[in-house]
Image (cartoon, rainbow, N blue to C red):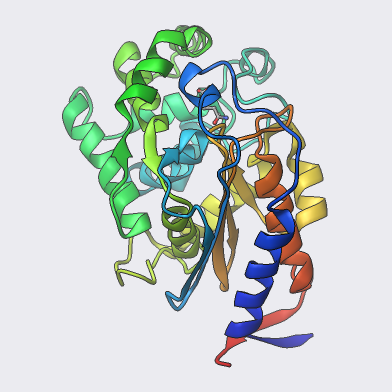
Length: 322
Ligand code: GLN
């Protein structure tokens, strides 16, 4: 079916989804990273950016929270830019694990394969693949520069979060060395892990993540800056990765109930991509048992339901003035 949705309908749906989700209770801040345990659990923001660059923001949309696993998305984009999507498929994979984000068992089950750049193992491997090899400062510049390009503004390193993560990332150290054992780390091990830890510790706003989502929804062309960040194929392949594993072991339930591919982080951020239409991001610290923000999930689902949208609906939807 051909459908037209107006810009004001979208704004209204976002405002209502925000208002109706504000008092949703449930979930707990991530407690295995001390910094995250202490973030105000009542913070809440919802942002939408359309593929024409129009932005809507409700609530705490300028608060810089830890990007955490949402950072796996831009680094997957970067790895595909530098090594092609086929290179990433070969060197990392694109399979959902169906297991928690930090699963060691998943690596063993996949027969020494990190599975996908959107779980910890694959994301550490993706950091090891970032060029130029052997040069942590330039690699870091490439990682953050790419995030800036996708968001049309810069992320900032939250030093306290970085220290907190570095002091407690024992599980990720085990993952890194296990991957090294299987020849799946393509640069120095500790440096690759450190880049991963640092990228997770970047502060980002929901407003920035909505722009990143909109860039991916817009075939890699950032609608705010006008810059072509990656080609259309990479943008589309990135959305397939998000759709298949964005919520870890809850990905099927999420896609089934929300109708939108989205990626979460334990900082409380969720970034959704609706190809051709918009990017959406919500942020609220309390998480469910898989590490996905409870309130952000509610808000994005409500928004999708109000507009009767779903990626697999078959509708040809266009957004029009009005
Ligand atoms: N830095 C966190 C970790 O490696 C990110 C996890 C997440 O956001 N799901 O455990």
